[in-house]
Image 1: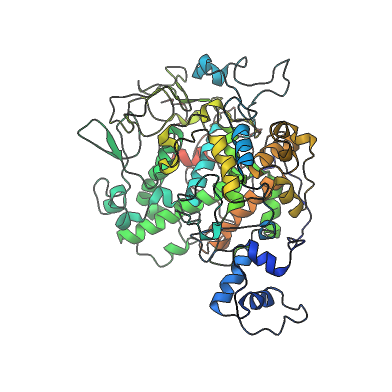
Image 2: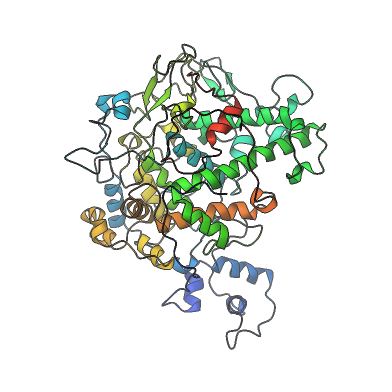
Length: 608
């Protein structure tokens, strides 16, 4: 069951995507980058795609090349390891022509000090930016909406769980920002399956640097955990020059201390499952049915599947209700997908999700965080003992000693360092009922100032580090994939588009953007206007819900396919405090608090 409704999106009536209007079939194939080959391959492809249309239904069976053309016309790549297109009928309708005028306008929209900058007063310091309503963007008498208000339905942990999901399923490591590219020919550097390959890597045999911890019969399958600081972190090897080499399945997962901590918590949970397997009822898990748990490799596979089912359950019952609303989650679960319908076994990553809708989390990032409660001085019952507050990123700190082995203690939240105070106190990030949980920001077109000067280490793959303003990077990606305008996507989904007046702020920078708005910006504005920033609106919400649930449904071993009534069991003995916040959306019966408690990274009433 999906968690109790906290706030709902309106659910549009069922419909199917309309065909591309105003284009001949030959033009449609051309804009898809396919063309019509000599000998009628393009026509044969259309014959199959239009069964029942007079004059086409008698076409011969398509060749493999023709089948590929058919799939491409539907936005489906030749394999799931390339990007695809959820709404191919809009492929010939990009929001703007990729010329210098448009690029300049996008850079101005996303520039520091521009319309998207939340203009945080970084001189106020990390603690005040988080807790002082006079500087942290909360509503004031002069600004009753607030500059960048907190979201009572989500928590700090919501942001970084969303980032963990994003890294699990999408990574464009090759395209050039702002330069048009064909998604159907572009590799996705990770599997689009929700398989946590960015945590587990290729398993004990394929990623030996991640496994082989401790002693005992199944030590070869235990994940290594580092402890260069006071508590857990990625495993690392110290180098002679004072730096360290982190061992991790995905380099992006050390972009922030928060994401690093969550990734390691999943590693810890897996290690405990590996030890506890003999105590569980495993009959529902397909991998366990024929497994020999005395075999280390098979034990690894079963333990991984137990973690994945809990991960999937938390996406369906905690994450999605928070970011799209419970009503939309129920609608997609009950009625199925209307727009994202990949062929079985080829659940690709749609560009509308990866470079549009799922980048909403950047607007929810805080300028600063409370990493923990004790700054490396030891855990206690006092949450005010010695909190470690830090800016998300501090551009004044040099990058010359990235991955330092411990002698350099950064004051910000960049990940990858092993200094004693660099760990997470989880009561700030998920609700344990003790009154300590903190909230992320509402979804809106304002981005914290700390994301306008990204450290080079926080830019995936170190690509194009000269473009350090995250909003500019996101806006240029919309141009890279020739994404349609938010208004076009709304109409395709059967949703009334936002008005020109709703988008007057971006129109003040470049007038055409008020009526043909970059998809990422449009969905941030839609969330703000339609749902007061509590969750995505009907356009962004539909794309996010259908993509994540569609990927899960394509996995034959997921709990949605194998045991839809599955209930999580790791950490269900957690005793919550008396002050759980009822406004936080999603499941009240099981949450990340339970999972982290099982992982052993948090203990109720103890603040580390």
